[in-house]
Length: 364
Image 1 (spheres, one colour):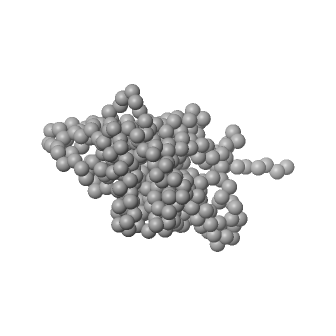
Image 2 (spheres, one colour):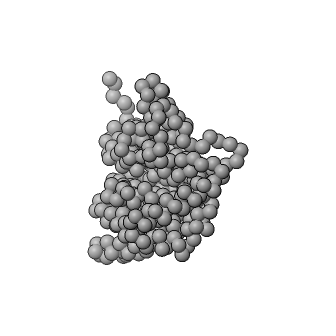
Image 3 (cartoon, helix red, strand yellow):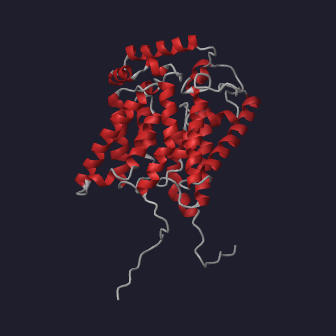
């Protein structure tokens, strides 16, 4: 008789990597739709260009490793990386810069560490940071979220902007369009920028707590609450993944609670010692906070394996995000904090190991 012995874990449900990653794409769909409504059709072209390029890179690596090139394309993990990366970068970044960051994410961050399941860092965030450090001027070329951007940045004009190299002419075209939308808007506020943290540092010089997120009102739209609507889209996708059982509520809750408490403490010190900061709750609805809470720190590969470890890692990332936002050189910090948390994960996994079944805890 032949007895088959297999090591744990033993899967009791038919849950594959392809199914999990596909559901993550479904969860990201509302954010993609709101992004296009807010900023125009640049994201559509970036998704297409990066998907083709990343698929060629993935297939090439698998051929070099003498494996089936379709093996790395059928589990949708590459598509998740592409979507998160394209949502993070400016929609009209020059094409060669976009492909450069995608190349770094796929070849260096993912496959240099051994491929799917072996990468220490989140590839999408690493590719984003590679561009943020390499071409910081171009990475600031965001447009104001407004529904009129679908008319201004139509598919043809969006493609022309992406194919145009980053120069003074391109920057002036984006600035002119932003100024025109601000003049037409009934509420001229720096908070309508896609990167309100960066805009805050450029425009405001007075001390104390500054509210640059538009206060909630009965009329919530992309034109008046652009970043808030995008955050709500990420929340909708994240809640869907939690209810479907593909991610745990533990990490987003620990992350957001840590951000709020850290922001509360810093804002109290800001009032006392007179340095620029913002209200605690505003950290939750600016930048890429909600994307980080539900789609970045919940990455099963680059996050700790135990529940206690996930809580510790998420709390560290949330606190570091607020600290970098307040005192660091870069306006938003989700990607920096996430990669810093990824580097701590091996130590967290070691310190937060669960007790073996049947083993007793040693007395002090």
